[in-house]
Image (cartoon, one colour):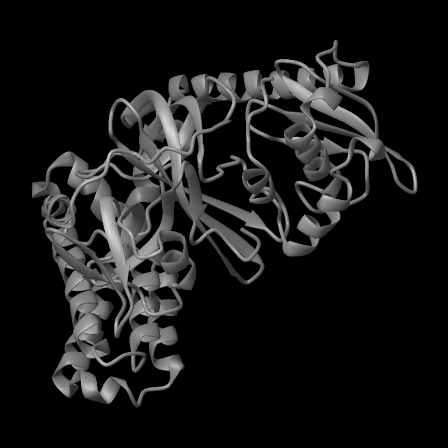
Length: 441
């Protein structure tokens, strides 16, 4: 059958734990009528307070249901997927009914319109004078913001970091707000990050000093902008907070076609906006890609990225001296279960690779590393160990990682920020175990 995910991978799509519980109650063929599938979709009708028509596009796991739920995917879509996993014979191959065909047709037209819009945007003549005026005004604002930031950092260092521990949160927030007003939101985020470090660990002053050094390095790079390599210029602009629209990324970034393994993902929420950070690895290219997605409330992310799946597609990378962030330019096949770890390295080799990345972009915040075989060792702090060395794990409970590994070496994927490892997935006995995907993983 075209659909090929596991129960765990389906449930990883759920927006919350209550949706998981509700979907499991609908994971029986008896709860459904007119079940069917084609190369493009799954569908079925579920009797609730009304007869709900539910459908799933297999290309990207997008869902649609006639129920009134504001969650995406809703419990009916999840239940339909679970039926396809647990009782494939109950979902026979068939011609899609009109309501499914109509939905797929609308999706195809929307995609065609999106691609046409991209082509028009690339070919559309630009008002060079107006663009130059806007760029000049923003540059002047950024210059003023950076000058004020440098003076603020000099005062902070003159007084000593020890004093920073006694400052209220407003000390950091006010400086961040000034940078936002100067149209430098990237620098503002770094100031808030430093403020969040103060007093949180024994070595907080060391880490805060490192981050202040990175801020200073970015501001110095901005002052020497014209002398920098073109790709590093993109990194400087992005660190300050300049954005690049998706059409420009596709037009000017590296576009790589490959089979992409979804190797790890983390989801966080701030002010009712969820952010997903997903890591993909190309099977043939070996390229690592970071996909960032944002969604308000319980809305679905644009791309369904489930750990332990693989899809054929073209990714476009943001221009950079160390291309890392990417977007899905085109999916060329459905997501399928693929519980095989990417090629891993030793700890020593992974650190060498990270050092090379830092040589290209010194203020790089994190990188995915995949270890071929490592053992988790409890302690203060917990450590990940292999024959070439050891690395500390982020503070927190790692009982799942310890229990899954059973004290034996196993492949592991983790984010490395230069200080701590943040595990995102491990592989054991032919299955993948997400370690950072959310409360219902």
